Length: 362
View 1: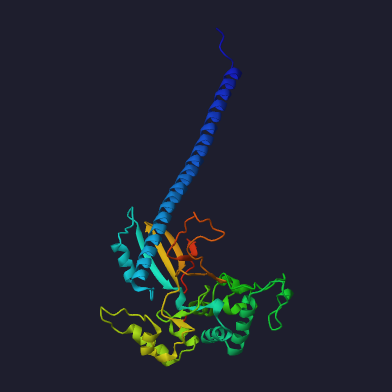
View 2: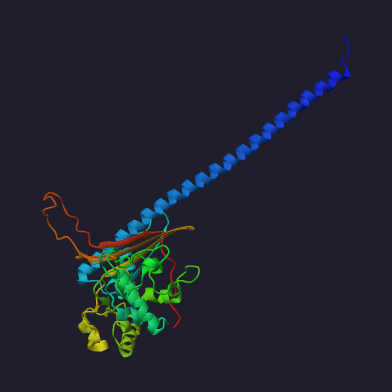
């Protein structure tokens, strides 16, 4: 047997080395692909788990909201009306049998939207007074109030603009006033009324806008609730400083267990602030109530915000529409049953709750 030559041996070594390198490269590539697959699969599984968790929190949030509305409906039936947000409402919610499931934590907060001034119903004097109280010069506040009212004045957007209204046709690009009530506070940026007063260079709300939002509501209702109105609101609506101080003292005073802590009529309010509370501007009932529901489970939170109104009138951001009376109508078949839901839902938001605006410095 002839021994193999050195050339043949070197060729065999090269072939085996190439195979080993190919195997190593294949293993390395497979390792990279496997690692990427594991990362992607883990991300998708985490996203699916988060989505399932949020669906459960969302269901819990709406369950809490419906339970709250049931408690409010029972409270209104017992007293004839809702007068002021009450911390005992959450206690009555627990007494009614509602309890979060799955170890979740649910918190409910109330805000009387009708304790503010209805912006769609406001006049120029009220808007101007509020702006001046927030630090805007009187001449600028008057001009801005007129510009805002011209923007919200109902009518055809194609109509000729008012002679004293800003000319939006000269803007770049040109546009027309909305001719309806504001549907969001961000819409103020489109009104020709000194945008820098309401928004800074980054688009964030200024202190003037924060104060303005505390005084006014985008929803349309007839009268402001004295039980929830701030001192600034009642002064803007015509009460004096003495009446505002008397109202604040009444709320802050200690009260007996059998006292409600709120006015049930304007006659009761007159015993504290006199007869200055005009029935055309003030009431002692909640017309629009904001309900904030927060559901937490671990580090995940779901926020649900709803504004509801008393039955009989649907309060919208740009109009007030009478509710449909019970019973069948010509457009409604007699066999169709009408659901008498205890509240009209004016707005509802999920996870888009605006950051809390701090109170302006006094």
